[in-house]
Length: 402
Image (cartoon, helix red, strand yellow):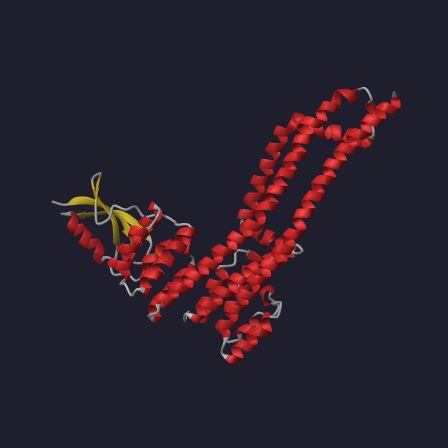
């Protein structure tokens, strides 16, 4: 007697799969799937799930979970623990259920005969190609512990950079929001208080006073329409930005903005060169390293600029020549890479370039924020002063008329 068995798992290529098959028992179905290279997550007969693991496979994990997983696994590997035992210990140390499910799924893959690289493949969207390349290089070279340590250091540097950026932008963002809210409340509640006083003056009021009154009426009577239009514009711009052409156009425009473009360039260069140097140090082939490093560039204009570098090197030309005329090849990068190629110190030089651009980004960002904060204060003061002067001008006009 055969039964219909439903299954869900990960196939030999590391992709999620599910389906049904006929087998006399669940054990026969399990063995048949394992023979096909499927790592079983769940088996079902009818509506009652039974299987080797009842843990659901998390679709993604966030950057904080990736950093914690990598750092703790590197620590455990330094103690010369087998990988499956290290994952078992790590499973009990995880602070969140989602991370525990991730560790359990990876551990199931290891116990099923997969390498760590193969077990992590279903999570490429969360981990990134750079992460998987480093893990594969570490396993091939027998230096998985060093690869994980390098990855943990890189992820910590990325997290530190994001934290510094968020911290630096928090105060200007709050200041800008308070400024916009102050002007809105001034027009919504304060300016209309003078409407009855100024109505009798008509055209005798100064032009600036009439402008402010009209703007106050528009805000008071039609703020819902303005809010709806603002939301519509936001949605349209967001959809346009989500399209490849829109994203590319915006990223190109950002790079042309004075000071801000320099900050973005330095931030992207720091990540690119640090990643490229780290991959080469761990034995990742040059062409793969260039592809994975380009994937770390979130600015699509810079990413498109660096993509031809793979074909350039593939054709047998020197890497330094490929940076000529590139945005990331400016600021003395090309001569340094040329010297590094001649001396055989390419990977360490690229890593030091990443650190140099990291320092540059912090310095330029500090200068940008030093400019933005006074500009916001001056802008708010100018608008408020204009409104107050316009109202006082109307009051003085009334006094002169009387």
